[in-house]
Length: 457
Image 1 (tube, rainbow, N blue to C red):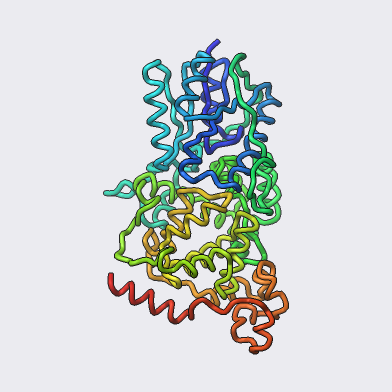
Image 2: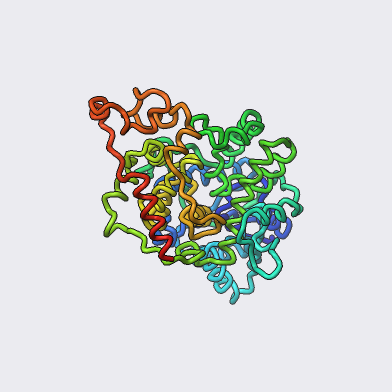
């Protein structure tokens, strides 16, 4: 019997899974393998919310494989050691893996190639599994990547996508390959109350439901904070429980402005992947260096703590931060507002905010999280790096009735209408009774400080 191994990483699904399909074509038996890598924990990326969601994904993947006669083999330890052990136990001749762009993913691939090389086992790395279009598939003249989104989107939109692959009917796993127990969600401590169920089944059901009711209205509603018209698919995309190729294909089949706006958001995800593939240091260092003297924990500790806790005195910012803590997710417009407030109004280093988001976000993805933070902070790919989002103006525009604020900031539940965005203007007696803090800083003062710092550059 010929055997191949499929190493699942951030592609926890059976539908549209090119490495699995290639392994099934190449061998009579396949070992579906997931390795609980201690390196993820050592890197500080093993946050409770993602660990709980991962447990759901692995349980769902195992159940789907068992319905097809197979099972998921779960091992714990360094990836290269466990893959090599599984190869030895099964007699596999090939290992299949989805390509990644982070420095960690690249080092993992290098270690695997080195570990397998001496034994003559081939490592097959597959592109366009985690993204719709492979990083580097489209490039501008004279550069290895696009630094501006709009021209990238034009080229990306014309790139032909492969046909999504159906889930296999049967997966035969060789006897004698040992596996450990699946991780359990209820064993994870410190999980936010509102973290949704993970897994391919939950993701596909969510997309089917939302595409029927929300996709057509997405263009008009995706910035509506209270309306919550976004797809909420980002955690499923982060873990690969859904295929970006399939999502783009299905959205385009439905057509219309809403579908076009949704596809554009999927493209943003690919855009960031191709940036980081070309500039891996941008996960921690400024993509476009500035001479900013950012404030940090040493000189802005109280402001940073207030921001993390949702106690800045600016209601729409605090609502976003409290949603993050409760759900492990935040509305995209609120992400922009909270990040702009930290980096440009409080003038705090973007890496501090990015780390806090990674500590809580279920969809906490090194690629998109870090590069979105840089976009807002003015050190990334934004063509208007000095823009500052005013939380009062933004709150009135995207939460005009104040329903989003009142949902997440109960101290302000009795403040009527648009007044909820400026509680400091209420009569003093009523303001004192709310138990809500005064603003950390006047917006004009924050803007003046930012402009002064910018002018030093």
